Image 1 (cartoon, rainbow, N blue to C red):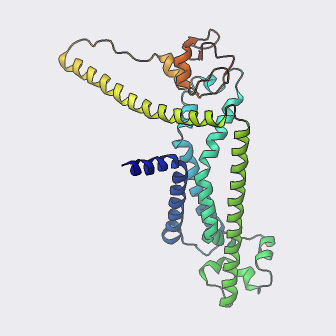
Image 2 (tube, rainbow, N blue to C red):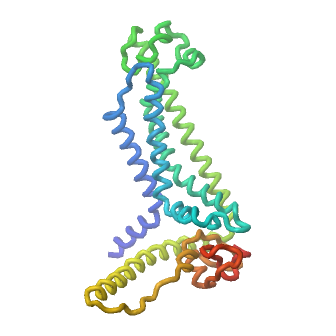
Image 3 (cartoon, one colour):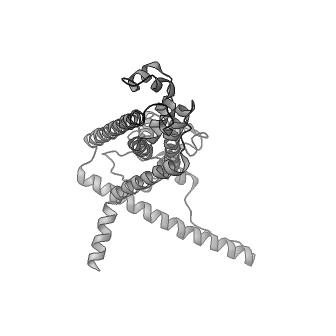
Length: 309
């Protein structure tokens, strides 16, 4: 039993790595499925558009899904049209762009994986580049090749050119090599940029490594318990309402957070060293709520923290 708990704890501690590994495997599988089943290079003047669509359209869809499934993005934009002050609070307008940058970087992981895998495979790039009409690109691709290369390059992917089979195969291998070089350049650039942003974020951290570890643990536990509490209170409230409906009687008072409390607890958290609150909910519980007289009735600030958040 102890061994099982140790293994479970290890996987829980490495869930981020496991999640990215699973995403990478899923991306590889999806790319191979697209290449084998859905992708059929037309070997015509439409090669460029067809190849680029298969290369970038899935990446765009993954980016949109990344934003849509990001809970921080939903938290950031919910209600912002009704009350723009939520995303641009007084004195902290730049915080919106900082959070949006974090959301964008996390959402870019899946699209970058797709582009890297697709370029390493080379099929989409080969089709797209074989349909180019740029004289400069044609000169680079067909350097040292017969004239047929200039006229029938778009047929290379299908092997239907009038060139010798060896020349046709050399062109295909050359295009695939270019694609793989671009793929590795993209992987190296993304890895280096990820390292730089991580190091910069740690250098700018307002808390120590141990406190940061505690903060992450607290945030995870609070999220788990919040979901359980939501379920528990939703069950109690629905049970009370159904019982009163069928028994035709007035309901008893049911303790619930106020509208102001819901609004304040939904704000994005910003850590401040003078007040060690590890989440927005923690800050609401510790400091309470107060309406700001200068703002609309839905604009809320935390008591004593508006100047320091």
